[in-house]
Image (cartoon, rainbow, N blue to C red; front, top):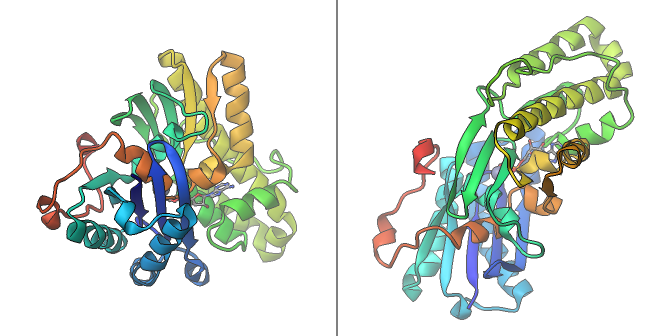
Length: 334
Ligand code: KG4
Ligand code: ZN
């Protein structure tokens, strides 16, 4: 009997069907509408989730060749994320589960990014060290079992993806900026502009990206509009290199502190080619196994929520009808 998972924490409407750690189907509908605003507009995201959630669930069922009567549990992202967006997914999950008296499994979005590594093929079993870098979060997670994770360090200001999106915007690229920035950076020289690799001398495992973003603002101001247009590729390459260097420096430090048998990456920024290459080199040098999930499992998706559901508490009907989503949560709750 398959599990149905729903994810609507930001601007992607996602549904998946899973049988254990095997993904039967995974459908992701990204809301291109936010491009024109240069970022996600929460209220617009919620409205689009309302329109998309039923067709996306239907598409996931069709792709798996299943119907709702065969589903025996419903998992859904409960937070953290945009509260209005989360409520759409949670309401849809309750509406599907309650009439059928099915259990509901609320899942932490970040646990989902970690759990993407548990999926077939080649699942990675804990313990492992996981770097999660997305538009909303940047953290190093110590994953000692499937049920959760400990936060070893996290960003003190912007998330890595948020900084990348803002840099992309400064360079005239659309939203989300990550893939476009990566493509532009490939044509540039990362050493042409030296941008600060923040926190590199900080002995802790926390991250910071706001200084880097400000440094880019100043470089752009110095260059002027025409100068920026001429040197866009070099600026993109320098910025991307500084982000990758910081992420890899913290990962290296965490590996020096504790002997982890494996490293995994999660979150949208983990789809970044140069980051993947740099982490691969680090792991090869240290003799640590590296697990890289497919890019479509790095960015937001519901398959990862289904994977986390396997080790999350299921709520019985009708108790979950009063269960609420959360926009942010204390670390201890994760
Ligand atoms: O995990 P995700 O899909 O959504 C959040 O939970 O935030 O991550 C989206 C973030 C965006 O900031 C996007 O620009 C970034 O991931 N991203 C990338 C790449 N692909 C997506 N950043 C750098 N390089 C990429 N190839
Ligand atoms: Zn995410």
